[in-house]
Amino acid sequence: MEFENGSDVERLRSSLAALASTARADARTMPPLLYTSPDFHELERDELFRKEWVCIGHEGEIPVPGDFFTTDLVGEPLLVCRDRNRQVRVLSNVCRHRGNIVAEGSGNSRSFVCSYHAWTYDLDGSLKTAPLMTNVKGFDRDKCGLHQFCSEIWSRFIFVNLDGNADPLAPQLETLDRILHNYHHEQRHLLFRDTCVWNTNWKNLTENFMEGYHIFATHPKTLQPMTPTELCKKVRGENRWTAYRSYYHPDFPPRGPFHDDMTEDEQRNTVLFNVFPSFVAGVAANYSLHLCLLPKGAGKVGIRWGVAGFKADPEDPEVVSYVELCKAFNEEDRAKLESLQTAQGTRYYTSGPLAPDDLEGTIWDFLQYLAKKLA
Image (cartoon, rainbow, N blue to C red):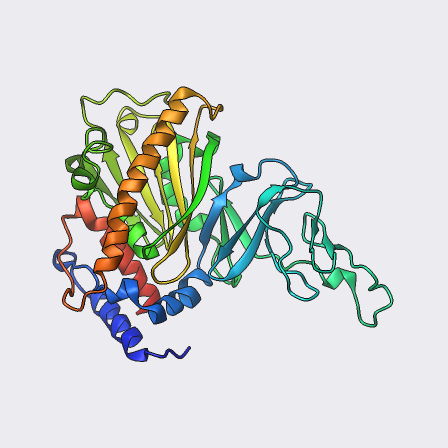
């Protein structure tokens, strides 16, 4: 791929290459151009978001056959649905006739009809009808279904690999599975979901979610009294993920209901993890919060986020209270990250030292992943 400002891209790739051979004791942040360069963002689109596993939602968004939602991943329109056999499919949301959008929004449907020329597709993406095409030479209905992308369900989260060449995801997350096992996220009900766009680079949000250093300053009333910065403990990550445990203050009351499998230690912390590149989640004793980050340019990120828990009623007062807490600290993060994106336009900041491993070691893991993939 060629870039209009190739020097910026090559300079950043060189910086990542140098980072890959840097000792953890000398860990530093990357220059702000990594978060602001449109050309480097194009490289990420091709080398990360088209080649890696990217989370695009939670299967609780489409619980019954016919349920669907639409989304966009680096310019690729996607139609995510549950077919008649209850299988989750990630389809191209582009009609095979003239290339128009097939479905919009979300809901439940028996089929998908392109409003341009009424080509109609079944829930598995196969073409059902194409008006007045029967006698067209070379027309083969069986070869005109919607393109189906490679997808996997991991812990109820829907992942897609656009180019279809990535190694299976689940085996790469086996260690993380063991860490999360007793929390039993797979048994939790999706209680809340929303979408939004923040004016910041996707990597800024990934790094922010994955470090506890900012909690005391950014969330002094929402999170610091509950999960203080000083009680964060890094988990040893692997090639596909990084994580840390955010322990609860001893004075904070237990956050049940607890699954019977949970140890006393597990009842006292939340596991926050990043499945590279752009899926971040926090699994607490009773609730889970997840954010699917879908870049929309160097300075914008789309977010599909949600809350899951053992309770089944979204209107339960405790559920409502937890969702409101999540909204509150998300807005606190948004304010900081959008101002950060503005500040990263400077020419005078280069990089700074990372905090100790328990506080920002996860950022170091994330940067090492970027170095491996993009240097």
